[in-house]
Structure formats: C-alpha cells, structure tokens
Amino acid sequence: DFNAMAGAIGGPNAAFAFAFDEPLSHLVYAAADFILVPSMFEPCGLTQMISMRYGAVPVVRATGGLRDTIFDVDNEKDRAAWEVDGSTDWKVTGDATNGFSFEGTDAGGLEYALDRALDTYYNDRIWFRKFQERIMRQDWSWNRPALDYVELYYSAIRS
Image 1: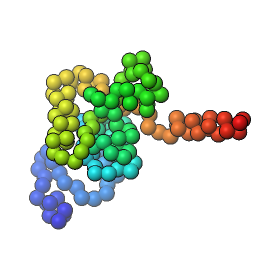
Image 2: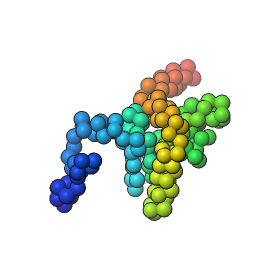
Image 3: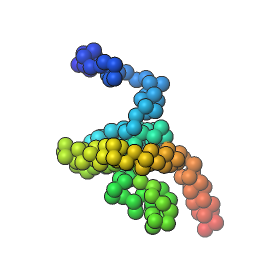
Image 4: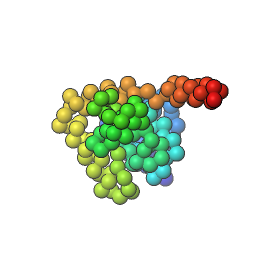
C-alpha cells in the first residue's frame, strides 16, 4: 500500500509523496541533478524533456520516446548530431548528447548507466555543470518541427 509506504519513508532529507502535485514536481525537477526513468516502455516521455529544462540530467532505459530524445553521452554523439542538428559530423556542430542511457531490463544495465552518471558528477564537476547548462539550452518545443512541416507543405504545393 503506497499510503503506508509514504508514512514509513521520510525524514529530514527524503519524502514519499503519492499524489499528483504539479508545483511540487517542478520543485523536484529544479532540485535534482539527475532524473532516473527506467521505463519498460515509454510512448512519448515528457519527464526527461521537462527535467532537462531544469538541468536534471536524464538516466533512462533506451525505449520509445526516451530513446528518441536522450542521446547517451558516451556512445551516441553521431546520432545526437543527426537528430538534434541534422549533421553527419558532431565534431563540426558540437556535442549534442544529453544524458545516460542503458539497454535491457536487467540490474546490470541500470547500474552501468548510474555508475557513469555518478562518476561524472563526483569526478568532473566542472564538466558536469557545463553538461547541465548544455541540456538546458536544447529546444524540444514544437518550434522547429512546425517550421519543417510548413516548409514541407509549401514544397508539396509547388510540386
């Protein structure tokens, strides 16, 4: 029972809130350095996009919308360059990776991603803070896709 768990967990540094509370969720995102999303499936995935706006680095299982929007810092520089900048060379457009991801559903995959994330946090804090700044600047709004659709529409009319 989640309500019983909420009463048993807590203290000065932790809490368990089993409720929908939009203002609280934004405070949690803003206070977090990481957001863990180990979903088995995720058709869209707003959690990671909201977290990035606040600088909370996503650690995700590569599935569905999570795979579409999170590019692993160690393994997906080329894919990030293509998806974010439309570039085939990340060295030209810059590193657009934005999180840590893992495959599979085993504890080992999750542990691998968390270990890499925590290693950067503890052992290269300057890089980590710049990484947070970079992911906060990424634009996951509908602005660019809307312009692409407008261009596609006008191109279809001309044909």
